[in-house]
Image 1 (cartoon, rainbow, N blue to C red):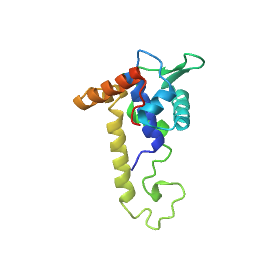
Image 2: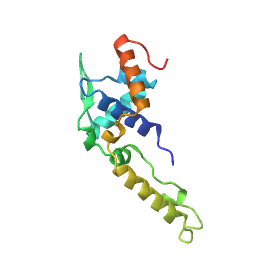
Image 3: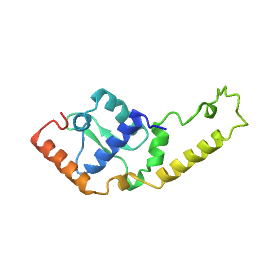
Length: 155
C-alpha cells in the first residue's frame, strides 16, 4: 500500500504548522519549503480545515495554524480522513469479480495487516513526529534561516 500524494501533503502541512505554532503560516511558504504546487496545497488546506485540524484566517496578515494541539491529532485519524481507498486488492471492493472470493485467504491476511497498520498509526500523534533528531534539527535550522533571509528553500 502506498499513501496518496494528498495524504502525504496533509501530513507535511500539519507537521509544518506544528513546528511554527508561534505564528500564522501561509500556503505560499509551505509550498516553497516543500517545493509543492500552491494550487494543490490549497485543496489540502481546505480539507484539513473542513476536518477541523487547522484554522484559516483570511485577509491581509492571514494564514493558518493548527486548530488542535499536536498531541490531540492522531495519525490514524488523519489518514482515515484523507485516504479514499483502503481496498488493498480487488476483493476488498464492492464490485469484486474474483472467482476465488470466499475460498482464498488473501483477503483475510491483508485485512489483518490493514488493521495492524492502523493500530500502529492510532498509537501515534502529530507530536510524536516532532520529536527532534540530529538530522531534523539541522533541517529545521536551515529552513528557519532561509525563511528569515527570504531564500527559496529547495530551489
